[in-house]
Amino acid sequence: MWYFSVIGTKWQTGVGGVQWASACDFNNQDLSSAQVPGEQCGNKCMSTVGCTHFSWTNYQGGTCYMKSGAVQQSDAISNGNTGMICGIVSSSNTGSKFNCVSYEPFSDPNYPRNVPQALKNTLGQVVAQGFKCIKTYYAQYYGNSIVQYAQQFNLKVVLGIQTSQTYTNVEVSTAISNCLSNSNVLVAIFAGNENLPGNNEASEIINIRNQVKAAGCKIPFGTAQTIGYYLQSADQNLLNQMDWYGYNVYPFFSNLGSGTSQDSLRAQISQLKNKYSSSFQKFFITETGWPSAGGNSPQNNPSTIGKAQEYANYVADMFCSGEIATQWISYFVFNDPTYKQNVPSFENNFGLVNSAGQAKWNIGNLHC
Image 1: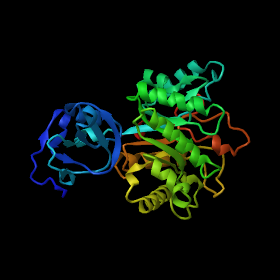
Image 2: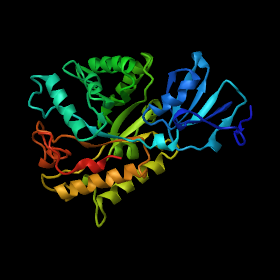
Image 3: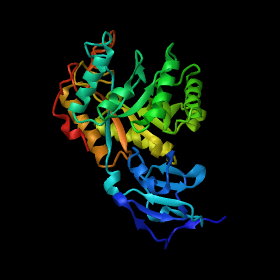
């Protein structure tokens, strides 16, 4: 069948400013899917982090295919199927961005003696600083599901799964349970963090992905690795299995020369975009930041509160302006960790707030 752009198709405006038309589709850029009636597909897209446009068919009684990326009406493809709908979420709705923070509860004095209280304390600190989303490294803490606690604080969750641990099976089962019962809270699931390349690590991540998908979980699945992994040694088989790719990027550990941290960040993202031009919309920053104290990096970059604030503002400006063109970003560890030992001092000073949850400066301007 020949497909052609829907030039001349009658577009209509629905609830919430959603633009939609019938007998059309948007190719590729798939984000996730859900079984809902056609009239609910636009609302489903608006409530799904990262969704900018959608297609709906009567498959399995009605399936809404949510998609991510910049599109316009002329990108829609006419297919003559009057049982299909395609649509675009209005710019006023897509402008809502989720400023996530990398989250750990370990610095709370109640951890691990009273894990529920530690989770409540630290999540309360996140909310108090205006953040709407956390990116975790674990799905559970001593059997306490982080998603269930985050839901109490109206937080979205980019859920991490720890790999190669004796409790990894518990991590996976917790993630699956939450995906099936609390999918409105979850943004995505990421298995592994900076553990590639490694012995059989890629295979383990793929296996976890297969378990999650086989259980019926439909939210995006990915892994979080260093930006260098994607630029130098990424396993193509692994990439083919992932919906999203998380990358951790730290200009603090780059040779800046006469440039700035912002120059380094832009250059590294540009390299990533050039290498993965056809799939770049699937890449999300899962960690970044600059330490506020603790001495110089091996590349002789200073760790000062002024540099940390400057870098935080750089990243926020790039994200909120659309230069970093994603719907969510996890920048900065929220709390300064207190549990890391035998590491350079700057490793314990990447937080936006100190170990007591007090902001190091006015971080309100980090929000879009």
